[in-house]
Length: 406
Ligand code: CTP
Image 1 (tube, rainbow, N blue to C red):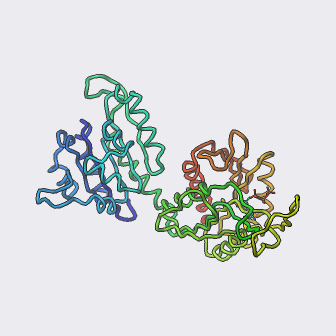
Image 2: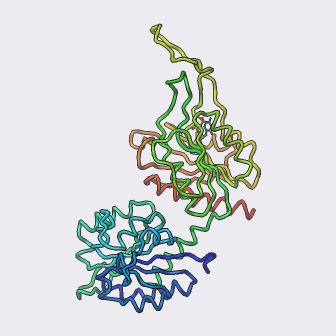
């Protein structure tokens, strides 16, 4: 049973499978969800506005203006919905979604929508196999808020048997529920995340930094917020845009000391901390007040150790709090990460090896190994950073649930 009343925006496009959509609407409404529907012009050949309006108990939208010549505001529709489901999604609509076309109300709403989109494709077997359709589907799958459902094998409208049938309404309903349940996994949980690189100033214009983009920490923050957590993102310098989600509070901390101060202050009120920032291990003993002029051939800077945030939080940690660190190694990954897990009193370490094939910094993909306190080791594989963030947060959910029950 849905814990809260979710708003579902259902986009129906012009494929024969549209005749099954009234069943999906009935299942969603019976479950207590509020459903609004946008029909494309060609979908009206397969299913009527009247049927869908009666079942959804709402007017059905078909174009930018209703019969009273009033504007159907696509931005309001997108804001209203918690989730968008496009079923059936024809090859034509998939192509438009992949390329940003905006020639009907459904596409305008889709382009205004930033939350989770579930796509249930439906088409004939040849179309399903066509290279362009494959490319367009890959494009949609690579978007972090899209879930592209598979198709079924069976009898198709053209008379041939093959891949391309839309999933049955019951199965689409199951996926919608799964996504919405996931969005509640971390409700009432507060999580501190660190991300990006610290810059340690040498003089007013120079610093010691590193190549961290902040992508992993930011992707983790977004995934945590999507599952209902309140996130405190303490970030150093990042080369990617900061998250926009209203439940993520971004706190800038340029240096290792600033990041340390922010984390020590925030941590006591958190259920978990995930330290993904690349914090400088050393910082100049002092910063020159003026720009340093070049004089001698050799110039030396004296560095001192920074405070270890992970270690400090490990000392402060209460038993119900979860502490997660990262380890970037060039050799002996498991042994070195294991040492960090123990020395810093962390519950989990996500380790990666920095090699030519897996540079870890400033790349889209990464490969991670998870080490847990109970000596369990799990390879999460090589994935895009947002996919890895999903896997990391799956593990955090499990670990937090275990803490709560032990
Ligand atoms: N970390 C931290 N504070 C620091 C340095 C690192 O909180 N001053 C955190 C990182 O965010 C990461 C973990 O510690 O989660 C491991 O970072 P790493 O630099 O690999 O570990 P070190 O303990 O500094 O070990 P070494 O540099 O010797 O590998």
